[in-house]
Length: 81
Image (cartoon, rainbow, N blue to C red):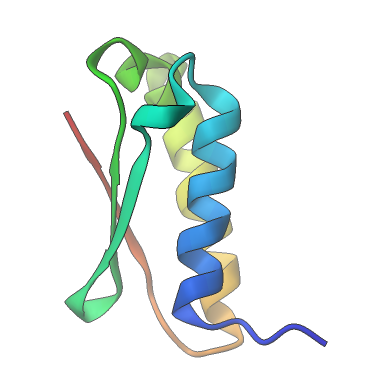
C-alpha cells in the first residue's frame, strides 16, 4: 500500500504537468511550507496547464484536495509564470 506523503503529491503534480506540456523538461514542482505546491512550466506551456477558463488547473487542484483528504492536509497549487 502506498502512503500519501507530500513527496507523492509533488510527484503526482509533476507527472500530470509533464504529460500536458510541450516542454516536459522545463516542468519544476516544489513543495513549500504550509502545503503549498509550486508548479513552474515553460512560458509557452502556461496556457496548457491552466486550460480553458482555468478548467485544467481547477482539475489539478481538485486532485490535490482529494489527495490531501486522507492525510488531513489542504494543498494549495500555485502556477508560476
